[in-house]
Image (spheres, rainbow, N blue to C red):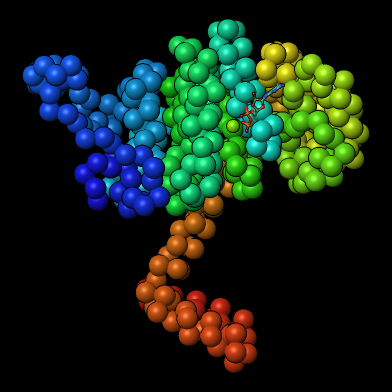
Length: 371
Ligand SMILES: Nc1nc2c(ncn2[C@@H]2O[C@H](COP(=O)(O)OP(=O)(O)O)[C@@H](O)[C@H]2O)c(=O)[nH]1
Ligand SMILES: [Mg+2]
């Protein structure tokens, strides 16, 4: 491993864009290096479990960041420490409103999150923003773009913005995202906004960790509505037509009506709640407070009917089995006996000498015997 890589990239060097720059031996102004100053300012190399817990519960953003880095680490040696931290903060979680925001790239998710986040901060709320990005390749610019776009929100003392973990699909994305959310809750954030970056699997990952799921769309209706996967609409607790400003305002309203019409025929994502369409302009800050009113109404309704409690319980159990399945899959493919014989079994299947069922049995048998 390169000495200039952060330690949490252990094992994923190739897929990680982050690099720690080499230090300079003198001060930046050319004067002699002054060790005492630097040493005093340098963060401790590692914290003990209790220090993470105490710092997170105190709402210390620097410690929270480090705790998230710890749960995001792919290094086996960080795993136990991370889990003991998560275990300790668990009793202090569950008190936030968790909102997921999805939509095609360019729909305005980041802009909307910044507008909503800033609005919530003005209402005295503490807001954490997370991103879930399953793309395995080095950031396609989305994360950097998001960060620069959220400059206004990043300046708020009550906001915390955390981009998606590097390393993408290299494993544990769901676990990392969920544990990051729990850490933010323990740190006292009232609202957690989770943006899905990229398209595809991040939608279900995010849906499985939030209370309220918002689908952001734009006008250009006809094709859009047809191209829109019905599945995503069925996951949403609200559809928000963004960019309802300028010459686009009237069109946005027409689009809203069309979505409402379609939603009428779909099964709502949440029992006892009617999914509706709304409009807003993230750029001009209109409809933001109204949208939050809808979220609050949802939380009130879902709490009263205990649908919210049930959802969270189900999500936690699904998470448990998700991890069991990940583990089983990994232990199967990592098994040397399976790895050695796979190619041969595959050849036999393709040649029609072995049925798919026989092949599966054979591989599973190899795995069993390897125990
Ligand atoms: N006119 C208008 N443009 C917007 C609005 N919201 C976002 N945009 C623009 O749409 C583009 C994509 O926005 P972004 O937030 O990055 O979308 P994301 O990919 O969904 O996160 C940017 O150029 C924004 O300035 C809006 O409400 N009105
Ligand atoms: Mg974005």
